[in-house]
Image (cartoon, rainbow, N blue to C red; front, side, top):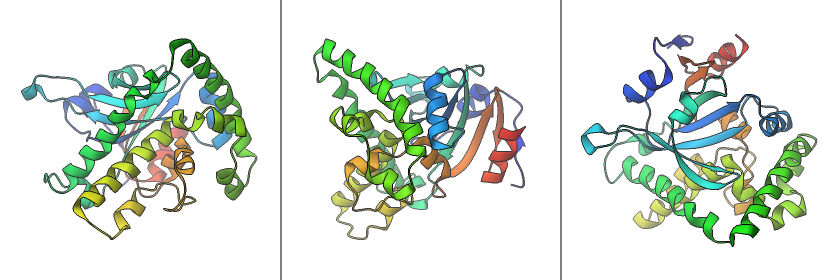
Length: 267
């Protein structure tokens, strides 16, 4: 494909009803009119401030007509109808990125499908974490997380890359704020899901695991905390994830490169 291609219909018609999305696709969103979203974008120097993952693709034959995403936010980890983003062009611009490695996209039960199921399964296993605390304590911690996030991302922008990964404010670590960074949740689900399959099949070659570490500043031996510090900008900038679609002001574009994306966002 040469240059971006404008699709005729809206995002629900073009991407959901025409089955263009795949399980474990990554959504990046630009939240319009959100102060927290603006702070994240400012702090990371990116157009994108949130990330989610496609969890279930619609399947009328199996009795459900909706596509769902799984995401981490201030209220914990939840599953939502993708229409929450696709049907609100005044609130969100959206990008779809995809890991296009053959071993991940193959639909055989013992190959790509197994990896994608594990990635989504690990994400779902985390959904009960938000119920592990008493209600009042949980509400208080959510509010504190939101306040801390509002300061972390502008603070990160002032750090050099090495220091940015190595140091996170101590109060943020105590409150486990990284566990609620949406893009860190996506990165961790990929890393743990793929790693689990490799353990099950006894594959010693770690190439596949390295291919799902989306930030080049992160090494395979880095800690969980560092992986969870992955930002929406890191996912957007990763050359391991292919750009597939951009939805800007409700208009759907098929894209194939960073240049295509930048052209649309500038227009």
